[in-house]
Length: 310
Image 1 (cartoon, rainbow, N blue to C red):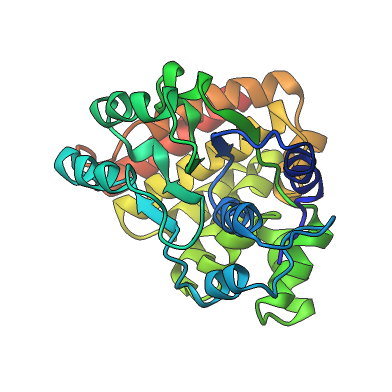
Image 2 (image 1 turned 180 degrees about the horizontal axis):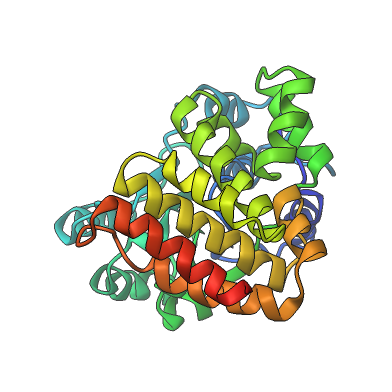
């Protein structure tokens, strides 16, 4: 089931209806917002024997095979650890006729993991596509893809679902409605991320610390910032907190956010303060803390932050 993907869905349906389905799609957007689910829906639609105005019929043999995960003409390729010899072998099999029908759909997941060598190898397949193959690339960061790859694909920028759509998605996945609302308010409308986070108590605790720090900084409460920092154990956790604080501050400058701590910073602090703070946090987040004594690292952080705000 798709949640919060109405615009993307209608775009693909219009392509199918007009007979102008491209040989290659690029679905980009932040991790966890549903690119994989949408790519599977696209594959099911492209191979459906009786597509409807709203999508695949979910009843034909092709749809049934896709739902069971056993469709021979839907191929998933995880790009992050792919080697050139593996890709050559895979692409050779794609030169053969599909097993079930006249079309095969190949989904390259996390395609930002493709090295430039692998991307260049794929160019020929994309430039001179077989009429029997459709390619779908999912990508968290399009900056990692070569311009020549991007230019040969129809690029669809996937949007985050709304808060309501995210809550419905989480409930569909078995989460209690009140819990879903709480998680969305705390961590944003990213269902995939929340579903990963929900069972990680340590990570939840770290994000609460990020939120507490953001509120303390926005209130110019140096004592509270120092108290929170002193309660953090481990260099990796300190660096994580600083990097997430930088992300919050950057979001307060560049975009609307559903995160209450980000909006609180925007309401309480001038744009100039947020800009200077983001610059300092960015510099601190580039450090890994390895070459610092942990306590000295904490002092450096609080001093750098309040040198900007005082």
